[in-house]
Image (cartoon, rainbow, N blue to C red; front, side, top):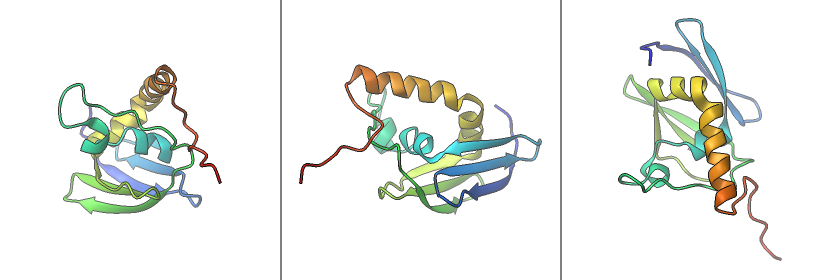
Length: 124
């Protein structure tokens, strides 16, 4: 991974994407859903090896807030009230470079577990 420094962090108007630009000229458009389901939080990653959680139903999640954390990361708050993920610049870069591959693994986990990217429909 590179030590590239972010020069831009911009949430799209519809709150469904985060654009991250780095000082080496690279730029990534990261979907909110990907950020949410691959969050570095303990809620998603677990508290130890083998405890990673597959989070379903986040297709329409949006970004509500971004809070700087030191000079190395940003805490992203989502409209499903998840806000414990601290995304380091290195992790955002990794999601930009390998996000499609990581998201494909997530989609395979959903399928394997009989889960969906779509929110559960509650009976009336």
